[in-house]
Length: 128
Image 1 (cartoon, helix red, strand yellow):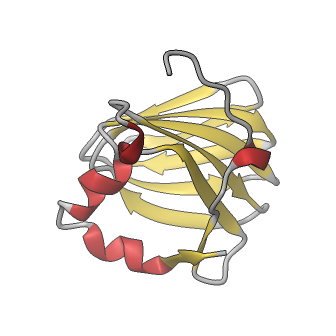
Image 2: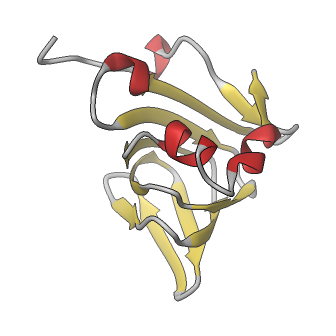
């Protein structure tokens, strides 16, 4: 299909980080044949998630205030704004208030993470 439409309500499987109020759901994954991943994220105010980027990522904030702490400082975005992250960067995702976002990654974030030294970070997530 050359044109597709996705909503967070249509996401079939959500994953939660440990017992935190952090939820992620892919709606376009490697299985789709697309060159990138697309998904939705929901973070409750105050929740943080340390991560090392093994792919490039754009975060489109759809509600709330969201910050990414990186080696050169923090970047904060509000609804309608975008944060871009480069592969190889150590970050901490942080919700300044309840936040929802859309993530777009290239290449596919899951495959890139599984094939990297960062694969152990996936152990923190379970099906919600």
